[in-house]
Amino acid sequence: MRHVLATAVAAAVTAPALLLSAAPAFADEKPAARTQEAKPTIEELRQAVDRAQKAYDASVTAVADAITLLKEGMEAETYPTKAAVIAAKKTAAAAAQAKTEADQAVVDAQAKLDAATTDEDKAAAQTALDEAETAAQEAAEAKTAADAGVTEAETAHDDARIAQSRKISLLQKARDEAKGTLDDAQKALEDAEAGGGEEPGGDCVPAPKLTVGVSGLPARVTGGSTTTFTLRVTNGTGEKLDAVYPYVFVSAFDDEGVKDLGSYLDLEWSTAADPTWHDADGLEGTSVGSLAPKGSVDVKLRLKAAADVPAGQGAAHVTADYINEDGSCGGYPDLDDQIFQIVPRTGATTPGTTTPGGASETPAPRPGTGNTATEQGGSATTPVTPVTDTTASTTGALADTGASDALPKTGLAAAAALVLGAAAMLVSRRRRANADA
Image (cartoon, rainbow, N blue to C red; front, side, top):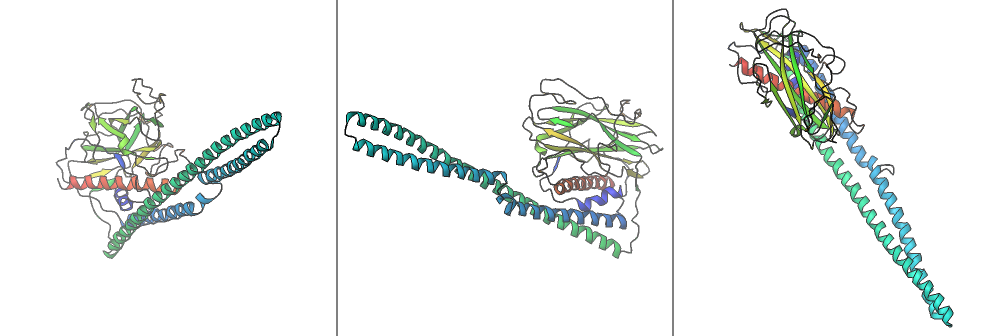
């Protein structure tokens, strides 16, 4: 838990438009017991500074690379829009030369007609003049089209430069935010060290055996589809947990790592005890009941993708807390995630989703925990894939999703750090709210 809370110090990094697209909203129910929030240790604060420094360095590199591309890369003859301008100008130059020659041919043909003395010579000269005038007209039209092609190519190149300039502005803003985050992290560490470096107290403890897993979320989510999947929380602590609080939210961004796709996604939840679908619009949380040792509880999730969603990448992020009646508390110490590609709607059915026509194709779940749920609200025996397998990161970092090479690796890593940091901030806020209850 301290690890998660410390991560909040490094929330804002180099992907300014990457925002949370949806967050879990269970009911406003709160436990009666008061809790004490655990504070990060000196070592965790040092680690937070290190993460913030790396995020800031990545943002500086991203800005420098974007400026170099604008000033040098986009003016190279091999850059697509620049190459198109060069080719269009060559075509226009050839068309202009052809028009000049065609116009001269008309002048020469007219001179021969004027010089003709016999009816036969005049007829031949007139035919030659007619042909020359037709060729000249075609050459003039070709030159007009070629000149328009130059204008179109130059406009496209200018638009690309403008788009790159806007991206630089976003990256510069993110760099400044990352610098502020680094300063805050350094200040928090300095204050803690100045206080004598005492280990912060608190009842909340890391609970790595309170595991969280996701099943049924496919690798590809298609625009216009509805995907139903499951979040399972399993109590492997060996002790009864009086109130368990699962958390889940999704984040998404386009293949350029710049545009937030949150407005295109809608996340909903339900449980066996409360089968009504609710909008997942907050992280204030409600207990899904107590969990006996080795017990599990399932939360059904439904992700709706708008029909016009652009291509991009998304991730479902999950974790869980518990609060006991005696005031002790703890939580899964990380924020796990499962990556999925966002595919624009093409009319094809994507496995694991429900298409607008109603067909559903859900792939068989991967090998999971296989635990039987024995919690308040019902039981479940469906295997659930732990997010700690090789398909997802156990540290909250976005894995390689096969995105376009146009997305810089620094931007992808920075986007992942932003998601993790923002989530930790929300989890921290929810725990403080419980502490004040």
